[in-house]
Image 1 (cartoon, rainbow, N blue to C red):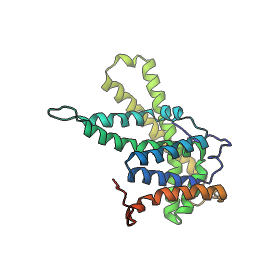
Image 2 (cartoon, one colour):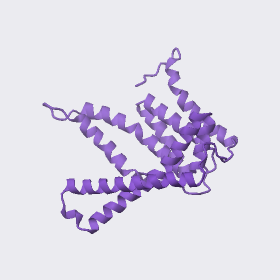
Image 3 (cartoon, rainbow, N blue to C red):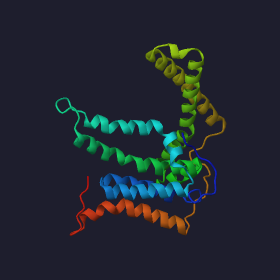
Image 4 (cartoon, helix red, strand yellow):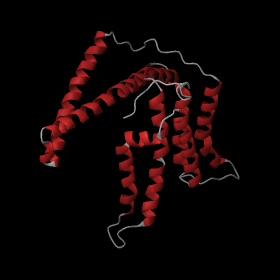
Length: 245
């Protein structure tokens, strides 16, 4: 799984609020326009984001291979039928259009995770959502970003240990049960340690967060995100009807 890595790329220097705006805009645009033009726009923005973050698409595919494998099964399942003909290309095509919407969003999100420190993400959320709600969301996102990769690492370590002890000779159900049970045990222990560490460090709901400042390029990127987010409104303009959905 991808995590933040320091760097000097263009995406590293952008304000996190501008990057969040692009993510939000891409998600709205690709889901509002499930057409070739919509996919082309989403794909172009995703490739530009990968270039700005100096992130290889192969690395993203490898890091989120489980997600992409799950998406790849969708068209096959969507085309299956319980009668003659057993496979319907129209259903598979509809499912493929739905699945394809997710791909640009995953790529743009991967660039964000790769180029944005957790503290800056929390600062951006708390500035966009002031008050207790923003602090709650900021703390939650920060804990997820830090805790989830550790949990995945524990599951990989447990799986390696099971294989080293001849686990491949056991049945699939037994292996899954052992990995999940041991992984859940480790996760609960880590949660207890995290609670103790937060208390020991006098955890604060309103800590001193890094200063965020919009620059000219941040306004341009945020403007792109706003344009993508507002693009479905073109369907409401008289004489410019664009089919949505």
